[in-house]
Length: 166
Image 1: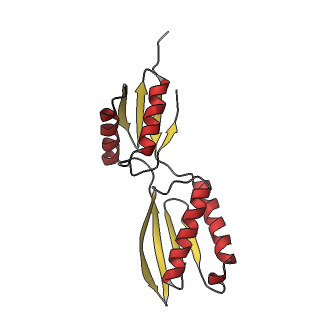
Image 2: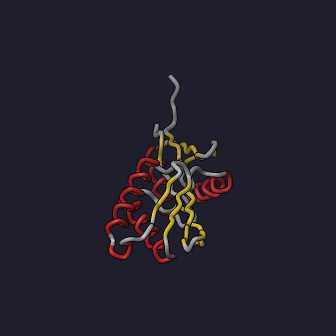
């Protein structure tokens, strides 16, 4: 019988269902707010990786974004995966803001995370595998310590989740 060392995959992904729920809750809250009464403010989600906030004033766009952030936080969605672009006039005296949702670990970020793990001194190995990082070690405690260290590290600019703990 072959001994398999404990491992887990480090991924950066967004729960689309929770994202849709937080957008619905934000739209409900916007509908009930006094400063949005009679205003045409909407949050559109393309179901994949882009959200557009459209409103009559720049203030309403910014407030809608903060309401969305608040609902994302309540639902446990990380804000590091959100890349909010500038508020732009969209014609007809309206404004819009595009928010890009990042998921997956690209090679540059993967390399940076691997360097952080190697510098940490934990007895684990890590390798980049197509938008995720597999971390392997002899002790499960070391793996959990590495995960905890990465979640709190200031240089890691993405939301991380642990998957496939073996």
